[in-house]
Structures are given as C-alpha cells and as structure tokens.
Length: 501
Ligand SMILES: [Zn+2]
Image 1 (spheres, rainbow, N blue to C red):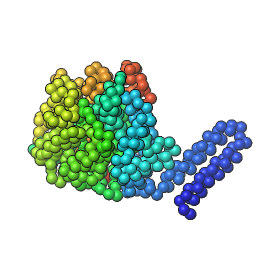
Image 2: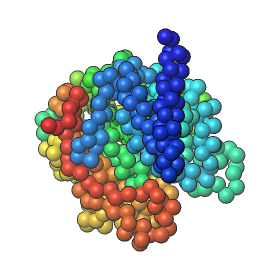
Image 3: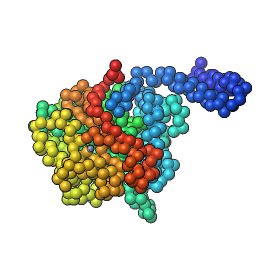
Image 4: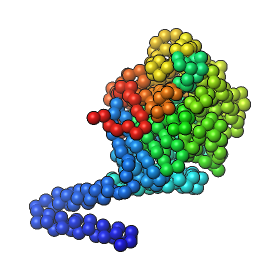
C-alpha cells in the first residue's frame, strides 16, 4: 500500500468505528451522549495513531521541580513532530496566553500577525527550521486535533519580535495616529564571569528571565535536543518555540550562551532573518565566540535586540556581543565579569539603535540593577560559583533606596510590587511582571551538559493571581491567562536525563 492508500484505510476504519458506535448508541435514550462517545472514540483513535508515529522514536518527557523536561532527537521534521506531540497541551495553552498579549498590546488582530509570519518571516527561515516548525504543527494536530497551522506557529515563535519591534517600526512608517505606546521589552538580569573573578578560575554563567508573569509562568520547559546536524543542546524554553528565547543554553562544543535585552531599542529590517531563527541556529552550530557572532549577524533583522553574554569553556574566554541593528560591539576577556540588566553601553549602539535610553538615570530599572550587579560582583570577586550565582539571582537590594525591597530595581524583579512600574518598557504601575525563573551553570557542569534551574521567582517568593487581580482590576483582561506562579526548588538538569525513579 502506498501512503495515500494507508491514510485512506485509516480514515475508513475511523469512520466505520464511528458509525458502529452511532449504530450501537442510536437506540439509547440520550443521543447526545452517544455523539459525545463517538467524538471521544475518534479522538482516542487519533491519539493512538499519533503515539505510534515512528517520528516519536527516542523522544521523551517528564516533569520535575515545576519544569517539563523534553528530549528531542533526529531529523528536523521528526524533532518538530516530537516537540508538537509531547508538549501539545502546553503549546495550546501558551499560544492562547501569548497571542492574547500580542493583540492586546498592539491593538492588531491575529490575522495581522499571521500575514507578517507568512509573508515576511517564513521565506527567510532556513529549510531545516521550516521543517521543524511544520513538524510542530503536525505533532500538535495529531495529538489534540488542534487547528493551529504553520502561520500561527511562526507568528507565535516570533512573539518577542513582532509586537515590540516590527509593529512600532511599522506604526512609525505609517505615521499611525493614536498608535499604542509600544516599547522593546526589558528582559532579564544576567552575568558571565571568568578568571580571577570565579572560585575555580573557570566560567560561571547565570540568568533570570524577566517577563510578564502571564508568559513567564509558562516558560518552564527544559529542552534536551540531539539534532541530526550540529551540536547537542540543553536550554530552557517556551512550549512550541524552537529557540530558548529568554535565553539560556549550552552546547556540546563548549559554548555557553545567555543575554539581556537592550532597553528602548528601535529598528527593524523587514528583509532580515528572524531573531528566533538566528538564535537557535547559533546555539546549534557555533563552536566559538567568533562563530556565534557571525551567525547572529547574518541577516540581522533587529528583532529582540540583545546584549549576548557568551562563554567558551574550551578556551575559558567570555564575551559580550551588543547586537544593535545599525551598530554592534564585541568585548571579550579571559579575566573579568560581564553583567547585563537591559542597558546598552557602546556609545555608537546607544546613539543609533537606542537613542532614547538614558544611561545617566540612576533610578531606572536597568541602571539601578547595573549598579547592584557592579557592587555585588565586586564584593564576591574570587568567590563566584554556581551556588553563589543562584543566591545573586534572588537578590533584593534596591541600589537607589539602599535597602531590601521587592520592586523593579532589584535583580530578582517584582514589578507587581512597584507603584513606579517601568516606563522605559511601557510597564505601568504594579505591572504583573518581573523575574519568572532562573538558571545557573559553570564550565565543569557545561562540560557534562548540566545546569541548575528554578521555576518562579529565583528568591523563592510566590505570585498569587487572585489577590493580585482583586487589588488591581486594571489588569482584569489578563484574568483568563494569569495564574499563580509558585516557586519550585533549585533543580539540576542534564542532557540524556531520565525521570527520577
Ligand atoms: Zn524575588
């Protein structure tokens, strides 16, 4: 039998099964329940067929410490299918929350984003990632019968770049009247250290992800990826998205990667290649800081512009790649510390790519956290290791008020506790956002592909949705999506891990 015949036979079997059930149920008093039973039977048959798909071979999933760990391997299309199948419920849930946020902030409908994905983003995606994205759709549909298609999944993968980079650029070009106040996001506190700064002289890298709690509480996947081509990767990530996207990852050739975004970045190149594609490609194929830089620059579209913090455990060198659109700068050292909290520092990048950012305003979230990083890292020079890095990610010192607090200026961000919000990111007072999870690793751990991760605020504090929404009805639109974000324990993950017995 050829494929088409096999498919036709399978469909016929499904239909016959359904007819038999309808026949059996038609004599029953409640035909609605018979109909429900038929739908359930068809869904179960579909799930059975999907679970037996040979593309799932070698893939697995388990949950630990509030995280979902998935192992993907093989050809791009198969890895996509595994991703879509194993995380189908989380992808549907994540898509609903993320797409609602994209439409709410931009006042554009979903069709707008689908069109941008189809016409602008898709044609520049490398063939292997097109296959992987298509595979996600197939796995997802096979598992749940979802009607999301590849345009939906591509727009969703670009959720960090389309609403906050493309749309503001488009609004400016179209001189849109009453355009919403959109700002590039300020995501994350991070550092990478080496040489005399760390306890063992080797690289230490740590990162906490700042985002809306609505998105962040869903940013709880650990991806262990063994692609047919390129290096093995271990990274945190979002269900349905092919890049880490917040970002934190290591590869089997010794590269260690994280970043923080550039506050008040402006610019977009519609002919460029999406950031989520370049970032995934760089983690998969770069074996050095130079190779990483080259891949990120190739087709740079300006989307989700970051200060990349990199380490190469083979050489002990660390680097900061400040990647603007019109300008960029690379710093590198074997003895130093490079921190990030959403500020650019190269005068040219600031001038041409983030002209509104004020490096002199000590009270803003990026600059206050920069001062705290400087102080905290200096205090601990020569003592920095993974355990200390974990503590630093949960730090609550407000460098402006010189006291302990939980607000937008602490390394562990709690903007829901701040009447100031963060105007540079258009986060209004008490915005439900901040540090949503943290990760840390060092060269020794990276060598055997391990990192530590904590879901929820890295300090261990909980966010509770119900009392928050009662106190802040201005965020009522988030109610269908906003959930409790309870902190889990610091948990170690490694490549090739199986669930605990
Ligand atoms: Zn905290």
